Length: 469
Image 1: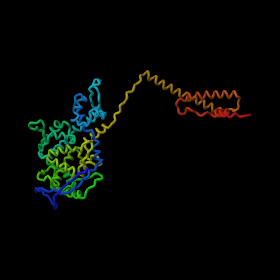
Image 2: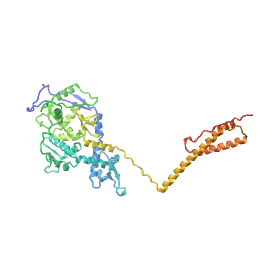
Image 3: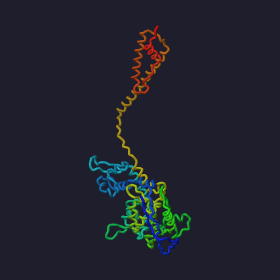
Image 4: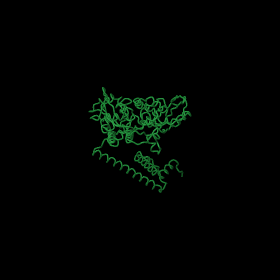
């Protein structure tokens, strides 16, 4: 995949920008530079491992909300698009037997229903404890407050928040549970002549109006002041080759003044390098607010459209592959903040992310179907024990008999080899009987065939080669 960057306009001298000056900087040029897209296996895996996780959790929450804790399959089929199930619901349910159970109420083979397994109900109870904790509620409210402060109008439609609810780590009922507990942060208001609502900022907080980039600068011991230059951390996929012109342009672009995403940047020209860097700072801060530090591109562009900078967001994704990674896994495009991941793993730990890992593990757990075993009764148990004991005695008797035979053959070694023809016939007959008994007593044991004794071997050789006198 190739992205072509076409920029123009003349050269310009180096400059220093003051926050009090309404300075509009012009965009520099990178003529016909092709940015080749290189896949990142680690980040692709971070996206792909959550396949079917979101629709599974949506369906789990829907079933749990029912009084009977079950749903007819027909109702799930009707809600397929709303739940985000990617294919036939019945196949989706049967793909995860450790999560969902299909059954027929009243043992009637019609109208199949779906319920949750005890394992998923246990994880759901654990997840609910996380949502109910004060620390989690405070963190979720802070994320929602910072999102509101990124908007110039200080309000967001609830419909847009619902799109970002999964990535913001909000519970399904956040409007009735989370929002009322923080009246100093925000409040819900209804749009006139509409059933839709808005989440409105109640009070601006200067403490929260500090971006991640500025916090890093302060922690790093830099004497940072508003309007100074801050460089974004960049890392590229293995095998990425950068054109010299693009490398030079990025170096100059990093030296531009950093404008906080919480500042008003309406004085900047849309096609300027400063405006481009401000849009990157907004996108960078937005992804940092999200719990997994990633989201679908459609969600991101919808938020950019609400801010009025959708085209700048699209341009930032194409022109800055060292900051943002665009994964095409799972049939959609997902924007990932590169610096938030290391070797495909999220650096910042979060209890909700750990909870989702447990869900993924359970989804891929193969549930063993155990066949019912017939439990023997007391009488049959005694018969079985007696049978086993008899078999053991029989085996022991056979082994004793074999020992006697061995002793007989060992004793026959000292006997005189000469004898009459009658004695040879008797010995031959007894030898055959002993061999026949040995075969019957040996059973299926590997050691059933025994080597004949010394006397038997001598008798056999004497019959084949008689000694002439």
